[in-house]
Image (cartoon, rainbow, N blue to C red):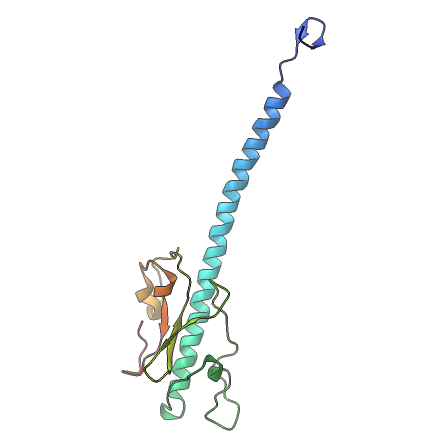
Length: 161
C-alpha cells in the first residue's frame, strides 16, 4: 500500500521534482555568470597588458634617446634608475609584471644583450582583435598574446612590432 497524504490520495513527489528543477536552473545560471566573469577578467588583463607593454616600450625609447642615443638597457631594472648618469633618472615608475601570467616578461633582445622590447609569455588567444591605437596596430588579428610585441628598435628610431 502506497503512503498517502490525505485519505485515499497517494503521494506524487512533485515537491522533490520542483526542487531538483530549481537546482538545475540555478546551476545553469551560475555557469553563465562564470563564463561572463572569466571573459571580463580576460578583457581587464588585456587592457593592463596594453598599458604596461606600452609603458615599457616608451621607457625603452626614452632610455635609448636620452643623452643623444646612448644605447639600450641590458636589464629592465636599468629603466627604473638609469645607471649611465650619476643622478637619479627614471624612465619607468615600476617593473610591471606580465598581466596575463603574473610573472616575468619575455625579453626581445639584440645580439649584444640589449633590450629592444618585451612580450607576454601567455599562449592564449586574445579577445581583442581590432581597434588598436596606431602604435599597436600590428596586434590586429593575432592568434596569441606572444605575438603582441612592445618594441623600439634602433634602426630608424621609430617603433616597430
